Picture 1 (tube, rainbow over the protein chains, first blue to last red):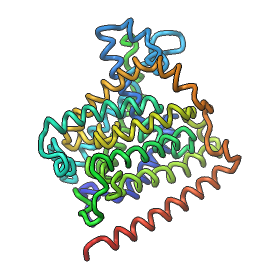
Picture 2 (tube, rainbow over the protein chains, first blue to last red):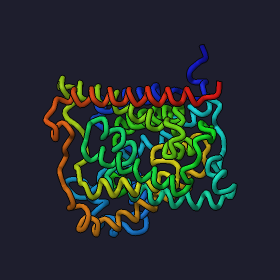
Picture 3 (cartoon, rainbow over the protein chains, first blue to last red):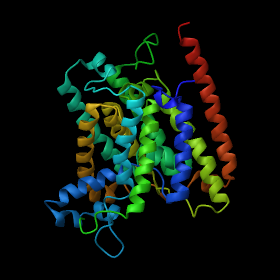
Picture 4 (tube, helix red, strand yellow):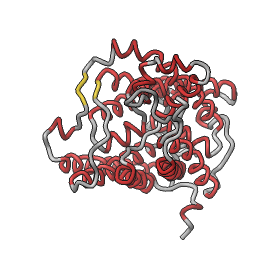
Length: 189
Length: 189
């Protein structure tokens, strides 16, 4: 049998089980639930803080998210910030050993529909990222914080998010790509 | 924000290890790929759904078992706010399909060489900053709509969590069985 770390892909059931068990560990050892999108607020707030610290200190959202009990701020470079930064390395290790690391600017499904322009893809990625985080902060979490962590705790907030996210994703994909024929090749790499 | 920038080393180390494993698993699962994520919403590739539902079921079993045996002090859920959760989820879904990554998978995608994910993260940081500015307005208008508090489906249904987990596990298994059979039939011999 091949060394699993050398495989390009693992079964989604194996990966899902792994993420589920990782959640047990974060609850048991760290008293935390997996999440990523709060760190974007911390990073944006810290960046703005370098030029306008009073503005950040006076903003209700930064103080609500990172405010410490006795005034001032909790550490911005916290558990989740370390987590999100190390995700990049974890993924790199997986890609490197699986020989799937590849510099890619325009994904194939995108270029089949919208052409090979890097500028066009980057513009869409920027706008998409903007909308994504705005929505995540409004909902109070993203695919990991709400979708997985909240979903497994059976939180009402998270399942509302999950259903709304899938419904709107399906509608957006239909608008952008059309409904398409079923004959099209699936499992594009 | 900078007087107290870093959390303690132990917290950071635990976050880093969690992130390393999380990023590794996401990349091996293929959910760090634009094509895989977008094709989920086009019903052409169900990797995202299989991964998430497996993580939710496995995670739920462990977390609720630890809760029952008093091994963890409590849950970590976000309060249900119907307006914010649903509208945020709808906005998030649009962003997820345009960008082709969610916040966590965008970070992991950077590790496998996806340059468009870096641009997406830049957009996401701006989105987080703009959200912080928009928050006072949203707090007055949308946040009060349907505030239900930190509730789970256990609170709503008054059922044992084990009935809910069993239902979820059976539902997910049935869906997986159906998807696998369909995919097997569609695969060229």
